[in-house]
Length: 264
Image (cartoon, rainbow, N blue to C red; front, side):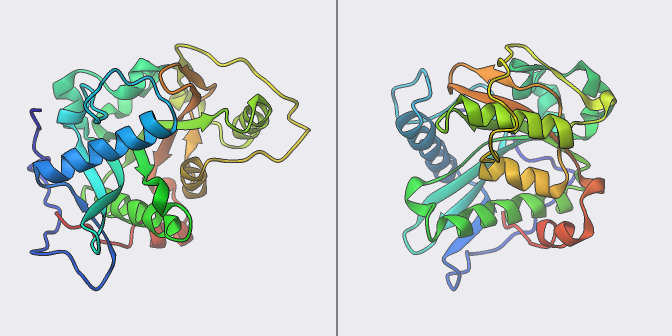
């Protein structure tokens, strides 16, 4: 798989070796083996666990965007194992490719004024064995790595598709949708339209919604949703377009999100 390099205009801080005193390290994958491990982890989570309709049979989740993306990975140093991953598509690589993943689900023409500042993130996942006692740590490492990337690349906007599975029932989606559109809707200039819509389901007065951890993290940072969710048939879930203006992050969260370093 052809892989484009990271933008040469910036330099992520390097480390000669991972710190073995800390069990979980986070870095940008800098060799083929780490990238392959990330792709296999994604297959395990999205295909084997969730049942996504991924048209591959080699144990890897790979699509046309991966060669253009940088891959953030969390490594269990005790076991030399990739246990968390996130992919990042820079504006320059999105321009080389000619599109972003979110365009397969949303009409994002409204974002043209900020497209040169817009980094797209996605395919975030944590190994199922690391989500209980250690899962919080692994997800926190992913967030700290992403925060370091944002700081060191001087990122202004982050965007991506935040998935809401229907495992808790369509009712939860209906309640969550009502909450997001009422309290976290983007300004009109940044709104997008789903290509395949999801029907409004559930009575928003019935319950407090269960918010997926990744989406919850975005909301705490002050992210907006771009409007109605799109239906993702391959993953059998609803996706909200999420947009984060880094300049809007509240100081108390900015200290945590932007205060770590990432190795490469």
